[in-house]
Image 1 (cartoon, rainbow, N blue to C red):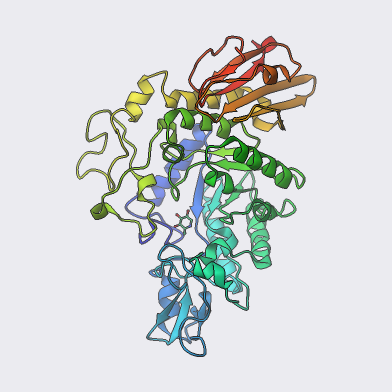
Image 2: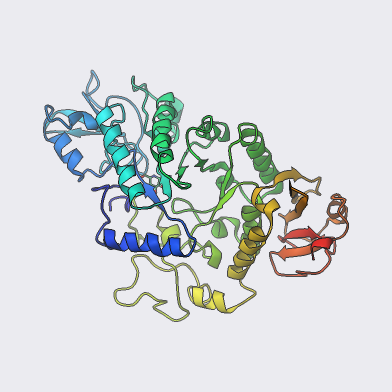
Length: 468
Ligand code: NOJ
C-alpha cells in the first residue's frame, strides 16, 4: 500500500483488506448475472518490493531471479546509471542496494521496482497471471502504465531540459519494445472466448503516440487518451481535442476513449469550478464518439476533498480525488466505526448518494438520463461525428448512424460560456425538421421543441421530432 495497490506483492490473490478470492469470484458471477462486466486493474510494469520475486532478486547477484528486475552498476563516476526521474518523489528512478552494490530501476516509488520484460521468464510468468484471472472469468484488464513495460535496451539519458523540469521518465517512455510486448498480451487475451478487453493506461500526453498503441488492431482494444482530461473548460480547446481524436483514431479504425476524472487527477467538477459545467461536461463525455469512462463520485458531482497536512497519505498528492463517497445524508455518511481513511469531499450531506438519488433534478439523474439516452440511440453509441459551425463559445456536433433502413441522429450542443447563446441557425443545419430536446444538462425543456437558445454552461441533446 505504498501506492495504494499499485505495488503488488502477489498477482494471484486479493489483498485481505478487500476480501478473498472467493469474494471476487462471487462478485464476478453477481455482476455477470446483471449484465455487468468486470475488468481488473493489472500492474505489469512493476511489483512491490515485498513481492517474493523481488525479495529473491535483491538477495544476491547470482540469484536466479536477479534478472527479473532491472539491476545496473553505478555510473562510471558513481551515482545512478542514467538521469531518469521517478514519478511522485521526482528524484532518481534508481535506488542503490547496499548489500549487492547495484542500482535497481523504479519508474515510480522505490517500493515499486520495475520488472525486466526483456527476460522471457518474466513475460511467461506475467502471461500466466493474465490467464489466472481470465480462467476465473474476468472480462479484461485496465493495464497500468502499459507503455512503460518495454525499455530502450541502451538506457539512454533523457533530454536535459526535461530532466531539469523533473519530467518523470514514465511519462515519456515510448519504445517499439512495448508495442511488441503488447501484441503478446493481446494474443493471450484473444485466445479466450467472449469479448475480453485490454484497456491500456497510455500515459503519454500526445494523442498521435497514444493512437499507435492500438497497433494494426493487434495491440490494445482501447487506450486512455489523456490530453482532453487536461483541457480546460473552453470551446476552441475542446473543439481541437475532438478534431484531433477524429484525425488520429478514425483512419486507423481505432475506437477513442474519453475520460474527465480519475484517481490520479483533480476531479473535473473542481477543475471546471461549477456544477453547471460538470453537468454540461457529462453530456460531452457521454455523447462524443468513443467509449466514455466515469470515475466513481462524478455522478454525484463530488468535488476534490481538502486534505489537511496531517491526513495526507499519498506521496503523489492525489488524496483529494480519492476521498470517500458519502452514502447517506447524516454523518457518518454510511461509514460507521473508525470512519473512512480520508476526509469527505465538501458538503457530504447535500452531495450524498442518498440525497442525490431522492432528487430527480440532481446531477445523478442527469447521468442516469444520459446513460438511458445513449442506450436508446445507436447513433450516440456507434455513429459518426460531424462538427457543426457554432458561435464562439459553443461546440456542436451531429452523431448519425444508418443501418438497414434505419437512420438514427442526434445533435449535441454544449455552451462553454456563462451567458446564453442563440443557436437557432445551428439547430437548423441538420435538415431534419424540428428538433426536440432529448436531454438538457439542467433538465430544462426536455421532450419539447428546442427553443434555439442555450442557457449559460448548458448542454443539450436534440433529436429529430419524428422520433418523439
Ligand atoms: C498509474 C496509476 O493510475 C497510478 O495510480 C499509479 O500510481 C501509477 N500508475 C503507478 O502504478
